[in-house]
Length: 165
Image (cartoon, rainbow, N blue to C red; front, side, top):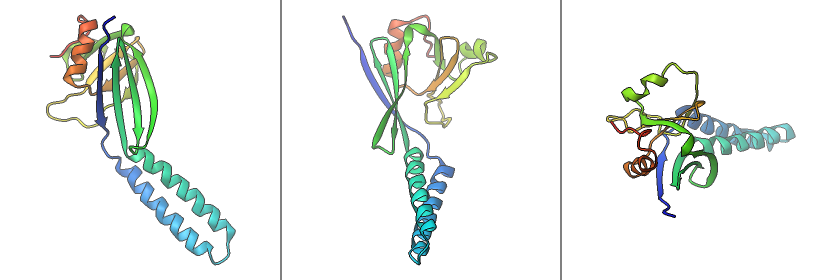
C-alpha cells in the first residue's frame, strides 16, 4: 500500500500574560525563600508552590504544534518548551467534511453552525493568511496551519473536500 508521510511544525505566538506570570512567580519564589530563611516554614511552602507554578507557566508559554499526516490520518502533537511532547488529537480524514483556507467562501456554509472550535495554529492572522479550517465529523472546527505539501497530500485522498482558493 502506498503510504504518504508529511510533517509540519508551527510555533505558537508567545503568550505575554503567561510569560509575565512566570516571571512574577519566580520573583515570589525567590523572595519567599529568602524571607523564609529567617525561620518561617510557611514561606518555604509558598516558595516551592510558586516555583512549581513558574515551571508549568514556562512550559505553556513556549508552545509549538507538530502536524503529522500518515495514510489518511492527521495527528497533532503539542511540544511544550521544546522539551516535552504531548499527543493532542488524531483525526481520521475519512470523517472530514471540508478543508479550506480560513477566509475562503467555501466556509460560509459552516459559519452559523454551533461547533466546538480548536486552534492548533500560530494564533496570528498574517498577510497572506496561511491558516486552514477543517470541519471534522460535524462537531469540530479545527484551525491549523499546514504547509502546501500536506494540503496536497490531503487533497489526493479527498479531492472534493479540500479547497485551496
